[in-house]
Amino acid sequence: MERKSNTFYLFLTTHSLLIGLFPFFIPVYLWNKGWSIGSICFFISLTGLGFCLSLFIWDRLVRITSFRNIILISFLWETLLLLTLFLESNSGVIFISGLINGVYNCFFWVTNRLLFTQTITSKNSGKRFGNSQLIVTIFFKLGVLLGGYLLEQVSFQAVFVISASVCILGILLFIIQKDVTSPVLVSDSKHPIKLSEILTYKDQYHSKLMFSQDGFFLYLESYFWIISLYTIVQKNFWELGLVVITMIVIFSLIYILIKNIIDQLSVSLMYAVGVLLYLISWLLRGKMDQNLSILNLFLWLILITFFTSLFRLTLNKRFFDITKSVSSLRYIIIKSYYSQFYLAVYFGILGGISYLFTDSKLFFRFVYWIAALLSLLYLFYQPVKLKIDSRSMKRTEMNLH
Image 1: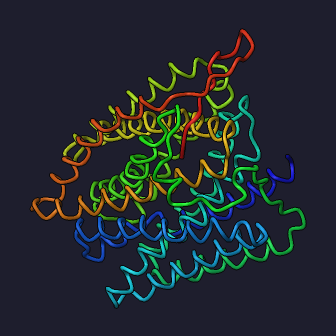
Image 2 (image 1 turned 90 degrees about the vertical axis):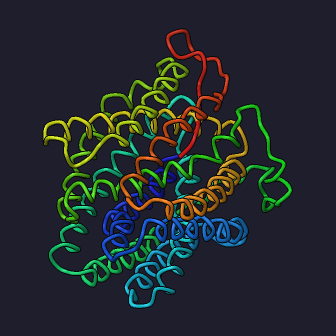
């Protein structure tokens, strides 16, 4: 277990730094280059498509090559993503980068989730996830600080050089590391998942419903919401970085406070409260604008960050508890196929709808209010039923990322 944890945390640390350096800024980078919200929607749609296509390859590679090679490939895709965005003079190349962004996300997120499931049990999944988020927070924050400063004060070329250097360092670290272990594949996951299995998949937890909408919500949080914040801070990369870091500090405090107790709480109640607060967070996003005072703006950001963080913690606990109770690899891959396919569909539709709006702010508000309604669908995601000691929760729940 310790060796598996070492591999997971080293992988998570290096990629958190890389994501903070530039991928986090992709939506505002494109927005700052004059891309319409419709074009960014199509970029996200291509990202979902690229993810699905590469997942087909990942699912086969993981069975015929060492897990070390899977990890090394993830760094190579990150470098290629930066390279395509570096060649920004060609708009066609930028759209190709949407596909490559999906490939990189696949090799990072699926690998990350699989590594994580090897480090947890149903009794510590909440705490473990909280610990992982604290690591993400530290290194992601460093990346955001450095990336925001370089994009605003220096150039994208500087970001490219530093990011490429981190990728090379990550590759070297995993080449020399002697204890990179491959996750154990359970008996029913020794063969690649077939299309018929994906299309007919159904379980008692209503996982498919959650899968089909979660990618959409994750990209609303990481793309649309980031663009909204960027416009609020007067289109300044550095100030955006500072705002996000403030939110991350709040995010960290929340995890420190509840990560050690979430596994002992009434998880059904916590999850229901988390969904309700998540709904409220989208309503707040829809009402937020530049006319708010600094004090009110800060208060709203704290509430949005707290509500979203609590929901994500309870959702991920439920997801990973279910993952541990079934075929881990199969469940993770099916989740990824559904979330990314519907990501491509939903944002393709949103890209078309966006051209009906002349004001991007009104479009964002429309999307955020729709998101508030759709967030209620998370309530259908059911927990695993396990018996725990009398002082613990009687039902251990699991869900996402």
